[in-house]
Image (tube, rainbow, N blue to C red; front, side, top):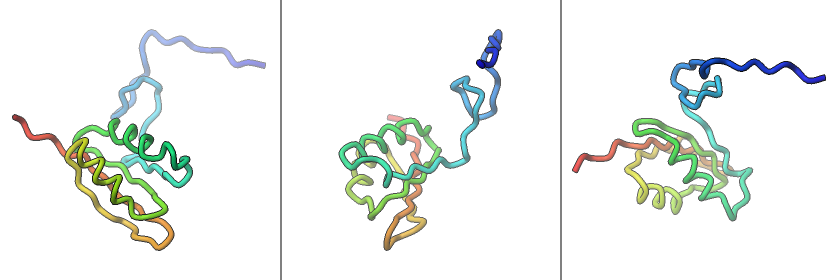
Length: 103
């Protein structure tokens, strides 16, 4: 049996979350890239990183030190990198998107 759907006059308010789904985000989202097929892993990280606002952070969990990907991310936007766990079987890296300098 299906449940009734309630149609609201406006999107529910959620502090710090603006998509209108009524959910909320963790303070620092974690993306475990080990579960993502290798062929699309970098693209998935780039998409997730692009959704992070300046000043915001995310943590990636990788099967190795993601140095080439970190370089590629630094070409997209200024970042701060903090290694939280350094191997031997997984690396946890906090990426913080820095504000771009005004020109």
